[in-house]
Amino acid sequence: MSEAWDRLRRPKNYTYDTVPQDDEAVDEGPRTPPPHPPRKSLLRRSLIALCSFLIMLAVIAAIVVSIVVGRASSLPLPSVPHTDCDDIEHGYTCRPEISRYWGQYSPYYSVPSGISETLPDTCTVTFAQVLSRHGARDPTAARSIAYRYLIDRLQEDVESFSGKYAFLKVYRYKLGADELSWFGQQELVNSGAKFFRRYSHLAANAAPVLRAAGQHRVVQSAQNFTQGFYAEAARNDWAGPRDDVITVMPEDDSSNNTLSIETCPAFDGGATSSAAQRVWTSIFVPPIRDRLNADMPGAELTDQEVVYLMDLCPFETVSANHNGGPSSPFCDLFAPEEWQAFEHYQSLGKWYGWSWGNDLAPSLGVGFVNELIARLTDSPVHDHTSTNSTLDSDPDAFPVGPDYTLYADFSHDNDIMTIMAALGVYNDTRPLDKTRVQTPDETDGYTASWAVPFASRMYVEKMRCGGEADDGEELVRVLVNDRVIPLRWCRGVDDLGRCRLSNFVEGLAFVRQDGHWDRCYA
Image (cartoon, rainbow, N blue to C red; front, side, top):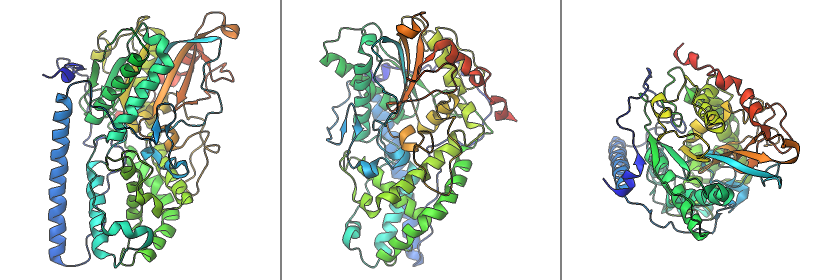
């Protein structure tokens, strides 16, 4: 086995907790079949069907090969190309008038905060946990096939491309499926560097405890984060401990996994997500569709195909072709206000699929939050939901105690949404309006791009402060993409977003009582 694979702790010999599960796996967005069939000859229909099948086989083969190669590569990882659009402290900064309205497909950026994210002068952080989404990636396999099909159809059916559409005449679809782009890798390298900068005083005595959900892009993101963390440490003449072993938790419905929750048979985030999005689609898409069809005679775009064209803007921008450059030409097909409508479309999907808009969604995040409580309080995990009792009782796989003060976990956007719901991050947000765009002020700080963009990160900090907290009890606060979350549910929370540890744990009664996990099997 290679050096890199040796660094990934795959607990093969454990007996995993298992529960029944249906055949549907939670994915990062509904998987929609390709758009309507071609309108011309039977020969054309057959050729396109054959091409789609071959593309699908190629995509699947590429994924398998990339996983094998990725697991066999040795650390340190190859250097990642630099981009002027992205930096360690601020994230993605190019074209903010549109790039911050791509929902969960937005690259990470530092979100505006009503409370300063800097540490008060009287405080010292004693514990830090980061929960991160993987970096920017190619579309999922099903979506990649659908996008390729759409481009092929437009190039055959449209009578002429002119003006801002001219690039479509010669455009060739080159996106892969499911894997990180170079830019996505750089996002996580930057994230690791930023984590070291913020908590370097803790790194002097403790290496981060690393876990990742098992999909290749998540594991690779954890590796990139580690690379960035220790590279930044070396630049600062750091002499602390190093441990880049990653505990990898399988993503399937036969293993309990708090970073990829697939063991709740009754849960269906995709159905509630799609239902909410359909309402808003029927309002915001038709004017865009009519304009595009008028500008491209013969296109005859459907509502779903308009959304696909909008999707291609962020995916192309973060792809290897652009390497996180200013933007793809697909972006200029749409006006800024149309991107704001797109953001709301994606926000509705995440809210009604994997947050408080779905009654069962917060319960899926309970397991991770119970693990967080154990880490914050140096105590065993008490949970009967998605935790894996075998792993959590193993001090190598799940260490707690005063010697462990840095933790880094890596997952997917949908799973992180459920965790943030269980943690009460957005429980003051009213149900989102499905008929109009809402600002972050109206949603109490929630939008998809503020919550779970590519390479998003949630920090949970424990700190010891003087002055008003001089009784010695530590305080806790939560930051999502640099925005300090006002934890109004926590008794005694102050105007800096800090809450006493005992009150923080007390306020998580829903979590400590396993949420509504029993409904998973109702």
